[in-house]
Image (tube, rainbow, N blue to C red; front, side):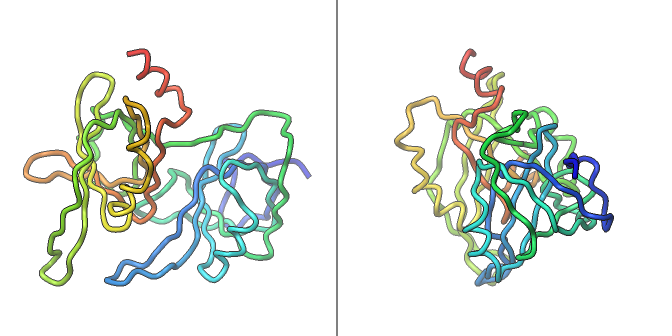
Length: 242
């Protein structure tokens, strides 16, 4: 059976064999005062550089932790393809893949063609004003990390206390944008190891919402946000040369 490019996947059509690399993963959690795991999600990419969002059931988290690792390449079969969500899309693809314990997962040690290590839906700073409050697709951002502020606590809708941490990112032209980390990602950032990295530190943050607060642009994390320090992407070399 020939390999099928990710770009050709259609909802509910017969399954076909994929060869992909796992780019990132995260535990999807419910939105409530005491968030609970509701799934284990991935972004995968094929040799054409096309990506797709993968979801699994919360009860299968340990199973997929044991069978899929970020950075490794796999051949995949026996999965389900469904329509992508209408808003907050992790990947701008028409479909999402659903894995379960019947999904065939075979690790590939050698591939005939190079598959990208990373995939990002990167948006330039100057494009952000065009997509304020447009939550059809979540966006990724890359820049030089210039400021890490301490955690703050604030009351949300007079009912609960939320934790946040602000970062400042600077692009290659010296323009700055603020990114607000919320809840768990805000508290865990201190343990990310960024303080041990030699400056300048570059960072890519994924699956952000674009908002405006008091007339200023603010990017906010979501439950699917993952961040990478000094990712191996062309923009990193460009920034370092600057």
